[in-house]
Image 1 (cartoon, rainbow, N blue to C red):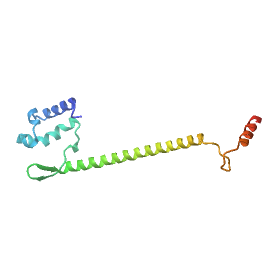
Image 2 (cartoon, helix red, strand yellow):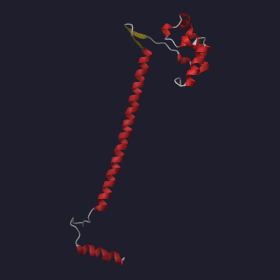
Image 3 (tube, rainbow, N blue to C red):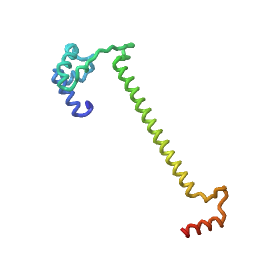
Image 4 (cartoon, helix red, strand yellow):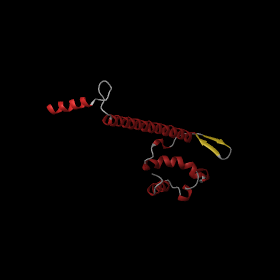
Amino acid sequence: GTWRHRGEAKLNTFFAKMGISLKESQQKFSFMNMSVRKELKEKIATHGPDFDLGEDFLYGSFQYRAGYNHILSAADAADCVSALLESFSVASSTIALRQKEISSQQRHDLDLEDENADANADPVSVSGEPPSQDAAEQEDRARKLR
């Protein structure tokens, strides 16, 4: 990326190939020398492909200005809205996935609780009454005979 030492070096090399000094490249566009500003688009189009900048690197846009300090670029606004929509999409799918995991875990926990309850339950006869001692003895005898 650009914000690593290697990316910064590559950016400085790009400016050097375009004939723009390091000092000039670090200024805001509006404060750059007028000759550099006029030729910048042409130089980027010429040297851009050497630095993996496609033909769509430069594109038309317009700005909204309110006073001296408030400037809003249409392209920047479109990128911001796109990023917001994408982040909401990612966030909502992450939330949905997490809810699915939680509900799956809750179902699993409930199944375990049911199994534990069944295993720990006192035996009940078909009639709903606890089995009598006689019935339990009869079952033991039947098991021994098998």
